[in-house]
Image (cartoon, rainbow, N blue to C red; front, side):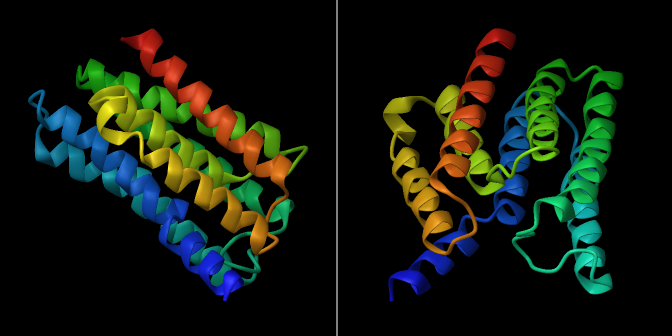
Length: 191
């Protein structure tokens, strides 16, 4: 029962689900500051759909053995493809003069680069990092008084990843701490 619950939590709070949520949060913030829908659709295609298609291709072709990309070595192609795709979105936001969105996307992009570099040497939890980035983002823009409960979800996600033996406690704690600090400081520094 515990293991089934951990698997369910791991699927519901999956980066494949949450990265589009982070992008949607960024998009909502940008929309409230006058950004047009055409640009936002392009951003979601480049930053969410293309990496998802790349992952699906890797799964179909056997370059990625399982949904969780358990083997560290199998993660590198997807990570670097995603970094390149996301960089296009960052540059596009800058090119059209959407400074607020550019800065938010830049923080997420640099975090992705850090996670990819760490993954060259050690398996870090992207589930933990993505969920911690969600905590940092929503609490930065909307306040800890409203979204403090996201920390509880983060803790449950960390437990789930260890429970199903996809990560160690070190891998989830480093992933969560790195993302929480990186996104919090990055957004604070950018204002």
